[in-house]
Image 1 (cartoon, rainbow, N blue to C red):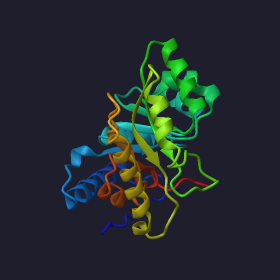
Image 2: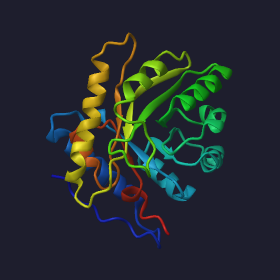
Image 3: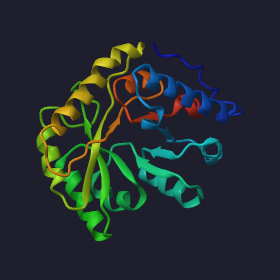
Length: 243
């Protein structure tokens, strides 16, 4: 059973981020152990969209090692001034014409959802002699408001992407529908894990789908119980974003 956290006050921003970081890490470890997993298998991605540098620095000082950004321009500005040993991930929707910037800024791109984007990233990575790590985003519920490839189209996209010499597919990402009860998201997390296992079992040489990016502030413990290796947490760590 997951434990609901009380989110920090978004107005004062005077709450101790370090305390929230360690609370989240403890709940990650507990969720892993409930299903016989090692806590070290799961990594926390701090979803830092619109979060100011002071709070980001607090989180990094507490131990946060991965920052996830949704917007290229915002990420570029933060990366330029944040002198910290962190890995930068892109977790938002990415336009193909931003591929050149993306491969220069990010270690892992979570949201590849179409062949044209994969090809653009492959070309951009080739230009700087880089092999870009990516995840393929799956739209599990067929929601028109969300990006992602359908589960039926996934095997073909993986096959083609795996053949691109400057792209390395590391796993899958998904964002289930929002539910007040995180248990209602469990079938979607389970479905992503099963999809990954099915594709992996086809035995494409060199294909290692080791990552499952799924779970956010309200449901990450359930996601971990279903196999998540990357959880994208913003509100529970940094506080509710002002509207």
